[in-house]
Image (cartoon, rainbow, N blue to C red; front, side, top):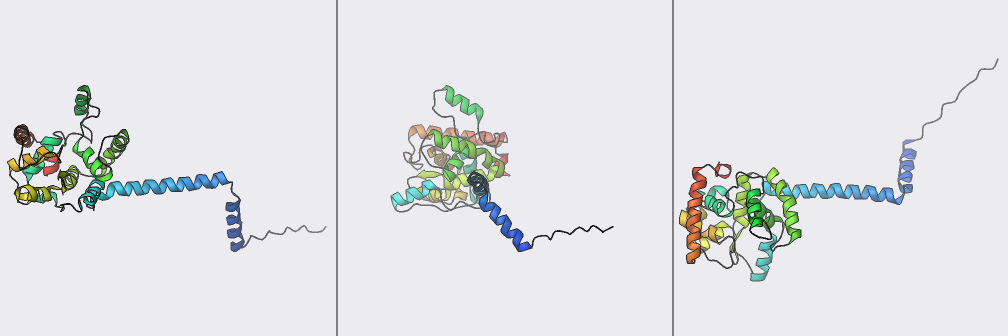
Length: 251
């Protein structure tokens, strides 16, 4: 009886396998290749967006769109970055008292303040310091639903990845305090001739009073109405110090 024998099939060589895989990829339907490309592109875009959100939590933003556009329009601007430790506590508290008294208590949006603003007929709700920082660093000035929508998406991500102290530090360094005057260092020296660490409570309140409309207001020459506003800011700054609402940025 004859023995039956089986022959083993030879495994294809490594080079042949590589060529076969490459050929199979080339034969993949166009929609499959497009889907793969879109998926990779989306992942790359998400990674880039994440890096752009996280980076300013440790790296000072070199410039913003507003600063760039004003520098082009005016031929230059006054600006110098200063760490928050070199900004007078009176200025930190005055800014929070003027712009966002509950800064340490919310996650980026002050819901009661937004409801109150909308109830009074405002087209948009009250902006927090976190929202204004996002607007200044990532977006543009002016009011539009597109910008507000982007702001609403980015603000919680900033709150998640930055400390409150860092948010306030960046805000005070990119905020506009007058035409061509950006950041608290330039503002303190331009209007009062002192470094930001030497600002008094009165000077700090005057600077904070102009933040909502810096091109139309001058801290060194406040109108009677703005003088009353500055006095309210001084009182508010003392209140948030007394009740501990400065803990998140003073520690």
